[in-house]
Image 1: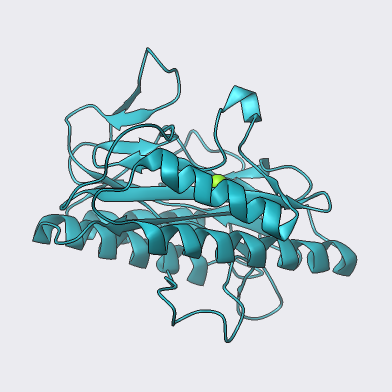
Image 2: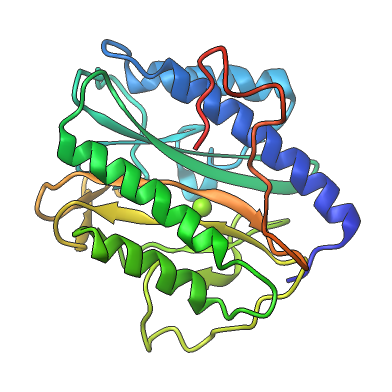
Length: 262
Ligand code: MG
């Protein structure tokens, strides 16, 4: 599970390109655009960067980016849906660069969103950072899960159980699973070591944690109670010291021109 320096050089590049493309798509989210048009933006960008979209064709997924709106939690399929003022839009995206994966997600609002949903976005984003802060050599994996769950539940929201984060490298999903909650069902709780690369990705619902899969498309996950859901994700490297964010926009290429940091 521990990556070599050579592998990490490729994963840094995969992470940077993932973050750049995701930032670009996030900046394009606006009232009146369709989710299909956002997917086309991602498609054009993977060609420009000469990488492969990680999700397209994954178990048959038909698009380059997962777009999950409002009560959709994850795995939404881009299509003719027109985004409108007040929507919240989860964008989950990854690339493969010379055999190595990057994976990241961000949720953005369209125009003016309800205060409750603004809080949902900020709590989910901060829950991700609370989890990342525990991705330190010597901690157990469950320190990440516990930090996320505690933060989310202290703020009155719930953590999705049915989908979890994951190790990442030459495959999008490697061991270990990285749940966003603590459960005796997860007996495998390794001590984190330098060189481990993890995709940490809290999925947070405003209502119940229970979700269902759309029986028609077999992909889109929604909340069972119709409450809105948010999702933030970074690919992170455990080091001897502070965790390193691999899916970061390179210095000088973010923070302006409409780029979104998360
Ligand atoms: Mg992921």
